[in-house]
Length: 189
Ligand SMILES: [Zn+2]
Image (tube, rainbow, N blue to C red; front, side):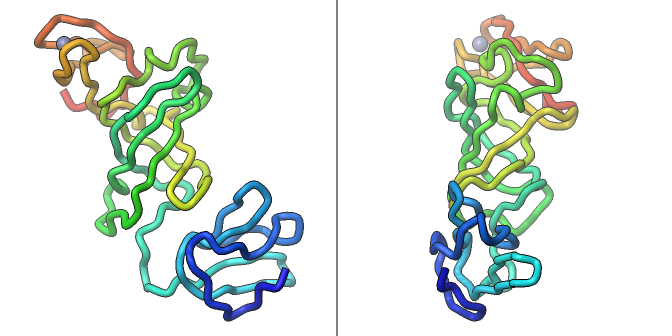
């Protein structure tokens, strides 16, 4: 790989391969290729086999592993719920990019989950933690912690926000429908 320390790169630029280097700050592993998440200059650490980027701006608002984000569920497929990320919790940086995240069924709750539609539905507002940066605007998320999961559930029947009635269920005050959710300890209502 020809990448050199000090080279200026843009988001998505290829920097190296994971067989030779570990992707470090502001980079991500794109199926074996290391790419930059941000515009900045390359920093190659040959001794420790790490590639990182020194961002051009002082504090770009980009997600990293461990960030707790909030967002809205946009789709629930068989094994994966998709979420549009609105921003980082308790953080005023905001997000410059339109990130979306995926919650795999194995990451929805601590125990075994039989049906993802008993955990999330379209329109739900959810808190989740970033576990992996997959690409420029795509991350893997988990909600398998008490304070993570649905904070506001949207009724699949009438679109009203629902009230929590026990650890796993919410009730629609408008139409009376009862549904299951992965409910956060911070559920609102
Ligand atoms: Zn309803």
